[in-house]
Image (cartoon, rainbow, N blue to C red; front, side):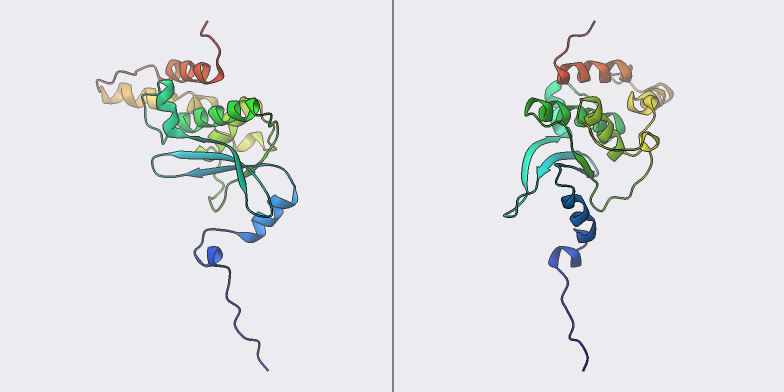
Length: 179
């Protein structure tokens, strides 16, 4: 006698959840840093597992950078880094010092926006296990590639020194003064 067909979980059928990966992350019993990217934004959340449902303990959205004076795109590597710094400072204020990275179904690409966000959270003081090799280099985080593009295109943008703008916003988020 043949076995009948077993219907897979709905979220697996929809391609939204990898349950094997989720079980491994939950087995660590640590808070998860969930990083999701869209075409125009980065969404970061610290999520705690509870049997009745996951609970978000802190979150940051790249659109929040505009409240701190961010004048560039919210979908680039420097914006992802600053969103990570924002979430990291929120997490530290709430007393969370460690987490593990949950990338979901995103592919692991060295130097991507996901790892820029991870670096921002780590730089804010949250301990997350990672390899230094996957993080984007400092020039990309500081926006040197964007500065070069602005200079080549000879556009009349109000921001021409992107690295100074990034440092300024980072200091505002962390609550430190520019010196």
